[in-house]
Amino acid sequence: MSEPRSLPVSRRNLLAAGAATVAASVTPAAARSAQPDRPNLNAGGQAMARVSLQVNGQAHSVDLDTRTTLLDALREYLKLTGTKKGCDHGQCGACTVMIDGRRINSCLTLAVMNEGRRITTIEGLGTPEAMHPMQAAFVKHDGYQCGYCTPGQICSAVAMLDEVKAGVPSHVTADLLAAPDLTPAELRERMSGNICRCAAYSNIVDAITEVAGGTG
Image (cartoon, rainbow, N blue to C red; front, side, top):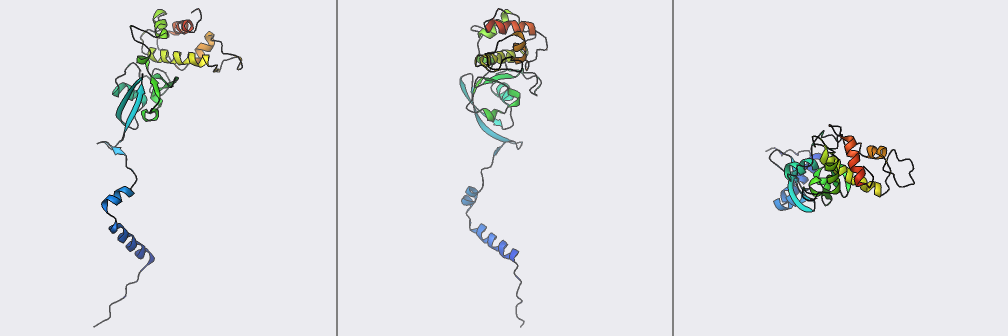
């Protein structure tokens, strides 16, 4: 009867056998706890998240694809359609809202990035029965024609005046050490990120100037 042959044991085989032994001894529950948290995926394989948003003084909790922009969350999920989708590239300003008092293009920020922040849309500024002074000035001076850009224009103008009051200069501010003087040139520069396709710019300038305390 022949002697059994000795099988060579390589370093790789030894490590593999040891790993297999350890894996077999781990319980399913322990194995699951050892794995990193996996994202919640929808039927299409997209990562989902429960997002809590503070919009116009109200709390909202929605399940969103993590790639959802704030603009789409407002319009498609919260049904706040006053905020308009224009170029969807941050170039026209139609989607401007205020976040913690600062104006921002909502098409360029993700909803998940704005949890816990104070978001104000055109619906949160006033109502037809109790308009914000800027809304009333736009009506008085006919600062719109088709009205598509108007929500973004008004949100931007309200936040812009707060910037001026805080002493924030613009590219055309002559004296960086003095309080900004809201001249037509200064105002146009500060509102240059909001485009009006109907070219109601002169009326928009008049409306903002009146709210700012001028003679528009």
